[in-house]
Amino acid sequence: MSLNIKKIGVLTSGGDAPGMNAAIRAVVRSCAFHKLECVGMFRGYEGLIEGDFKALDARSVKNIINRGGTFLKSARSKGFFTKEGRQKAYDNLKKEEIDALVVIGGDGTFTGAIVFNEEHDFPTVGIPGTIDNDINGTDYTIGYDTALNTVVDAIDKIRDTANSHNRLFLVEVMGRDAGDIALNAGIGAGAEEILIPEEDMGKDRLIASLRRSKKSGKSSSIIVVSEGDQIGKNIFSLAKYIEENMESYEVRVTVLGHIQRGGSPSCFDRVLASRMGVGAVDALLNNERNIMIGVVHNKMTSVAFSEALKGENKLDLELIRVADITSI
Ligand code: F6P
Image (cartoon, rainbow, N blue to C red; front, side, top):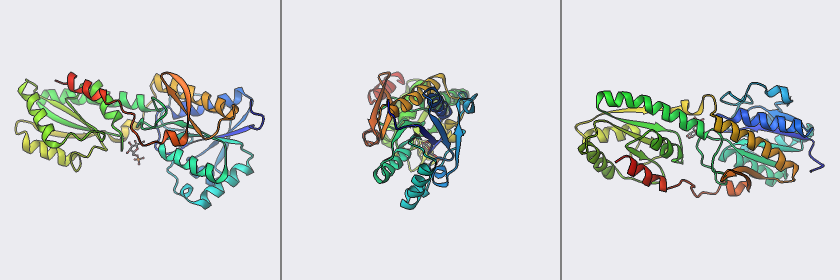
């Protein structure tokens, strides 16, 4: 056990994700269990720069495991991009005698942690919290499962209208650079087509495939489009193109937007967040630094931040085949 860690700070940064509260709760209670002090920082790295801190004990995190969002609030801090901002953050940590940090967020959060560590050599452990699931070194990020369920629930409802009116619906889902939400929710909701940034389907192939579906007897269709997909200029121009080339269909567009980030976390996300929160404090006590906690094949792991941010996409392309076969 590490002898030099007595006080741990915790913050959430970047886009919020359901389950972040459960992760904070696990960090705070883990600190209480190990008789360490815990301090919450508000609005991510912004709060670190401004010294917006609050001591948290086991009771401060009661009744939050079921709540979406993050009670510590989140931000994409501009100040933390600057050397002066990071220096202020470091000075605040020293002033408060905080020995280590747990940062909960996505790629921006971990990029910030890497730079901060390079300059100030401050012990930091990351927990992946983003609905996009676009982080390496973990099979799942916190919030992803809840977002999938939200999307599937929404598409189930859209399907009722699509069916009743023989319409084609384009449904845009989140995932700036990653198709995980689109591909998995698309399969789960039985979408006819799924457009993701990792694979360029091309407009012609899309139209040919829609024509085949129509010919085989389908009277309505759902196309799930990841927000990062490049096939049309945007989802509305793609809808126009389809309408011009598929005379027999009325086309409608639904952009699901931020409803995907909200809501009560699924049981899966609550358990994942609890395991990762406990794992983050364990890692600090075992003298691990500048790593992200992950879950791979259902086992807790850790990887260097740089590894977590590696560009390769871990999307399972076999899923595209599954989608193609099951939507025939
Ligand atoms: O949390 C990640 C993400 O959901 C992306 O998929 C999306 O592009 C982005 O957040 C939008 O976030 P905001 O509206 O907070 O800038």
